[in-house]
Image (cartoon, rainbow over all chains, first blue to last red; front, side, top):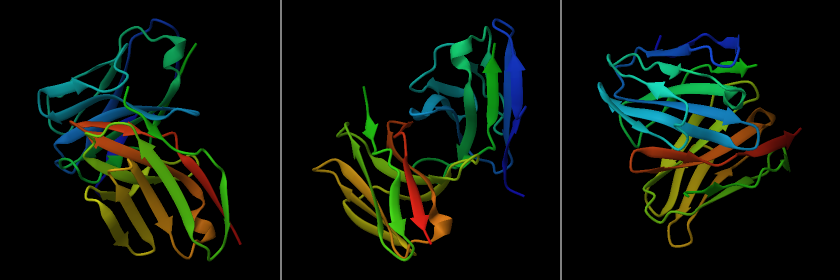
Length: 112
Length: 109
């Protein structure tokens, strides 16, 4: 089954404790992206990747890191999480752009 | 600051009516525009995208793009209760996506 998977789905952590949210797709997509969704603000793009080893900042990259060592994986790293990073995070992928983006199920992160 | 604006709603329409959802964008350089539907607690899913001026139809959905006026709209014909969701407009510009905050649609039986 074609899909985008994210882990974990729910995470409660404390300020400053490094964490990684994994994202994997099995569709051989080149474009991958991370978003955060907050009430009243919609989806905001954090980082995107056009292909392996090619990443770039989206609209709200501060406090996040990403890497794209393999085509299928695009982890999101929060090296020192803060409460303002409490949000719902989505990973998405597509063959290219403009094209259909397939979204993962989301990761709900709470930073205390 | 690139902006995509949507009326948050809720927009209420009776079953069988046409629902009209609107979106404006600030950057004239934006290349493509997307409409996503998001049910409560679920991930966004693409309805359609448009990049040429005019109308694009897909089943009950029609996207309309007017680059001169910088607006995009989505028409849903014969609205069904299952269309009740939040509709997100997004523009794509130089590899980046910018989303509006979404319009909540309620279709009443």
